[in-house]
Length: 330
Image 1: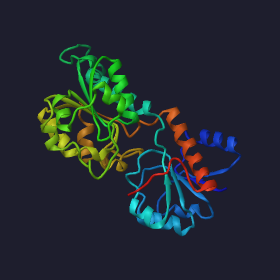
Image 2: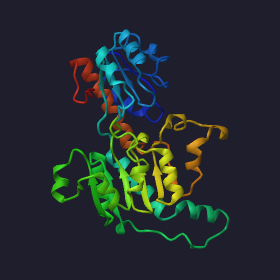
Image 3: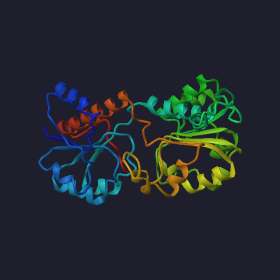
Image 4: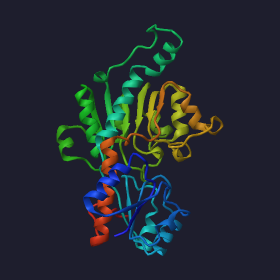
């Protein structure tokens, strides 16, 4: 059994070694991400394990199949950059890690809201200048807020529990309603209702063609003045230009963003100052916008689960041709 794992970071190596010891199978690890240039490294392997950062294009998928490899296991949940038509056309079987740690993502959304409410960037700036005054940076309390949760899957459900523990009123919207949450009366009937009632909106939905730029000018206009926006899901869910306009007008009082449109141009890279520009620089310069470089997942338990679950799925595919983590593309 020969498995190659792409894009393996130093923090992932201990979990690869753990899996190797438990299964007595050697994994070939490479630091490079899987793309059309590096795919040849997979020659003579039975399966590929990769991390979603670059697009899995039709050309890449064809090259994988040309190497007589039909199994690709991705070490994360999102598959929005996998060309599903090509997967079906070439007969590639893809698995993901449906749930590596809902708590990791949910906890960051709460942590960033607390930073926004407690005006942490403002106080940090003032204190660096020996200004230890309070005013005008008075805080809000989560217990006084109505939190609108868009997407009530595993992560959304975890976020709901945490926000409720703070004493907040929580409402939710999802096309597929969770029976328990429905019985609790969490759901509103429309996104418009959620926009109108929420003082904080947190997004925990996967990215699809149907929800591209879910939060656009029209959506922001339906929200309360001074709303706070949290996005730990996918960058394409928010129209960045529309968000900037809403921040400029005061419609949005603050935002915490772990994902951005075109984020691969910036995230997980060391850049020169001249490379930080456009809307990304615009957002970075605002004290009421907190940006993290897609690190919501980046906890020890989550990284371990991503590695172990992806390797288990790859092993299952090689041994049986199937895995309970297979992703079906329409």
